[in-house]
Length: 103
Ligand code: HEC
Figure 1 (tube, helix red, strand yellow):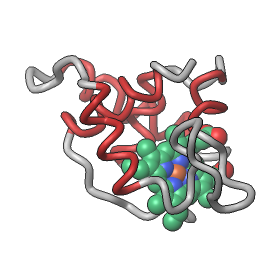
Figure 2 (cartoon, rainbow, N blue to C red; figure 1 turned 135 degrees about the vertical axis):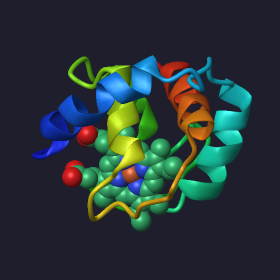
Figure 3 (cartoon, rainbow, N blue to C red; figure 1 turned 120 degrees about the vertical axis):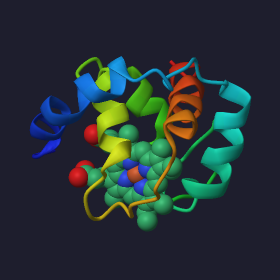
Figure 4 (spheres, rainbow, N blue to C red; figure 1 turned 180 degrees about the vertical axis):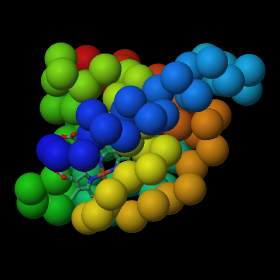
């Protein structure tokens, strides 16, 4: 995926040094994923249908090249075809805590 490393460079420091950054809550993350992500991504093992060609969250969780900082940067400012969902930092932390748990 092109664009991700540049984005990360710009955003990672801001994200990681912000005082509002706190530990994610995986249960809230699951609810957010069901609401905002499940129309395109397979967000959990029991979901049967999602869009073709969109990575499942389980496969995202297993990718070693996608660090949490990169994912946070990506979700802060996603690019098409993903819509910009304007997630708050806390929501991003929650979703990432959930995805981490799928590993
Ligand atoms: C309208 C459809 C759509 C929705 C809704 C959506 N995504 Fe995506 N997402 C995509 C597509 C398509 C890609 C693949 C983009 C690419 O490969 O360039 C993607 C890629 C990603 C990736 C990067 C995977 C990689 O290979 O680098 C992550 C992480 C991700 N989405 C998380 C989320 C999260 C979290 C949500 C909900 C908050 C969400 N997406 C909602 C369509 C969507």
